[in-house]
Image 1 (tube, rainbow, N blue to C red):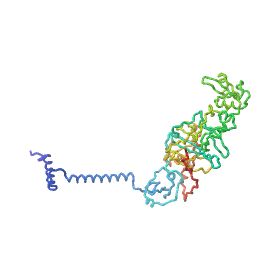
Image 2 (image 1 turned 135 degrees about the horizontal axis):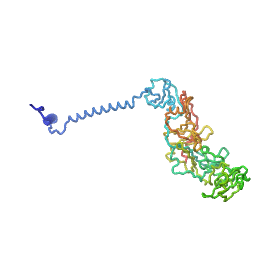
Image 3 (image 1 turned 90 degrees about the vertical axis):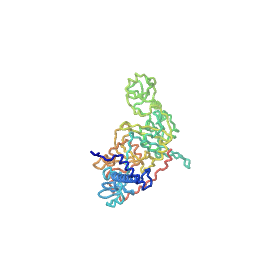
Image 4 (image 1 turned 60 degrees about the horizontal axis):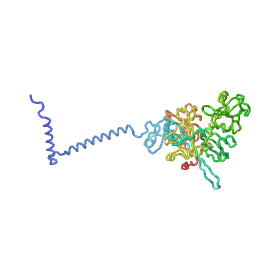
Amino acid sequence: MAPRFLTTKTQISGYRMLVRRIEQAFTRRDTRLLSSPFSMQTTAVILGFGLAGLVLAAGFVMGLIKPQPTRGEASIVATQSGGRYVMYNGALHPVTNLSSARLIVGKADAIKTVKDAELEKYPRGLLMGIPGAPDEMIPRTDDTSRWAVCTQYNSATSLDLTPNISTRTLLIAGDPEIVPAQEPISDSEAILVSERDGNTKKTWLLYNGMRSEISMSEKALTSALQVDQDMLDKATPVSAAFLDAVPVREAMRAPRLLRQGQTSTAVPQYQVGAVLSSTGIDGDSMYLVFDNGVQPIGSFTAQVMINNGSKFVDNVSAAQIAAAPHVVGADMDHWPAQRPTLVQKDTVCFDWSRHGQAAADSSLFALNSVPLKSEARDRVVALLPGTDQSPQADFFYTDPGRGWLVQVTGESDGSLAREQLWWVGDNGVRYAITGDSGSSPGDTLTKLGLGDAATQLVPWSVLRLLPEGANLSPNSASVIHEQIPVEMAKNPITNVEGLK
């Protein structure tokens, strides 16, 4: 039987090599088979087809990712030249800002960029939206809501040699390092400050995150504080806006007790108003005698009462104190436990923070300069002066690019109050978030794309220091304007460098 293959692979390979050698002999006059010009041409053709295929594939993918800039079904569009429009009742209306556009269409749509010629296909309408409302509303996601109000004074002398003192107020939002490398004043320290209200000058003692007014007429108190008139005159000047942010307690004065100086009914050994000192395992304890019992007090309160004429009784036995009824005859729990050491600096800050639903923490700082790093000071926003008599901050700082979705809570540390929702932009303007009739503020949040955003708590005493912008609601956005009135506002304070 004849073999199936008359030639072998080696014979075929040799034949092909011989053919290539003959071809090169005719074309190149060289039979050494060093290289073939035909292989380079073949490689170039293959690479050309490959690159062409890649270009076609890339074009197809780009068409899916970023299609031709036509409107399609988009309700909010922006032209390539910068115009911004919203589709409302079959017409394209220019819109003031993105938040207004979303409130008009009722959903948090993204802007679609189209060619300018694309808008020629649709009828036009007048301007719509809320003037001054924010554009992008990207909320902060901090675990802790932290706000600091700082006041700083500058003194100068006028031509008539009269001292001229001006104060500035800075509100800082959200920086976890608001006061880097600084410690708040301790429980044994206080700050003596003054605030001028017209022709009246008031003096306040700041301590334990609160303030109480003091007067030189209260000799028993000022003597216990070891404060004289000269120290009151040199108290650190602060702004009314700063004082409004600090929780206030009743003015400090020696309490007037019912039946003071007469024999106590509950503790007949002593007179009402007497200060008792008893020594126990933990040291000396002070008590104030009332008609119906005794109340524990600190050494500072005891000194105030003694300065006011109360009798001091030493070495009272612990058994006598234990046998007497313990009462709360006067609200003095907020008084310093001992005479505070007075601290005086040019800059005073009130720092308020709250982590989730935990109790708020507030503290006071006495500083030589505002608690911002040099690069942060360059981003401080100078606010317009207020149009009414309400105290307002002069400057605002938060990290640019994001705002704050906040809800007003009470001033007490564990307040359960949950009041008005606000948006605080990175420019320091606050916008109330409200609903229309039959809808809740939560519906407005959903339309703005903030439905899942967590709200931060802030006390009204701090938030009210920021200028108020327009209300954010669907009805407010669905307003058609022929023109927007020019706001005849004063120029802002631009001397940010004046902040030390």
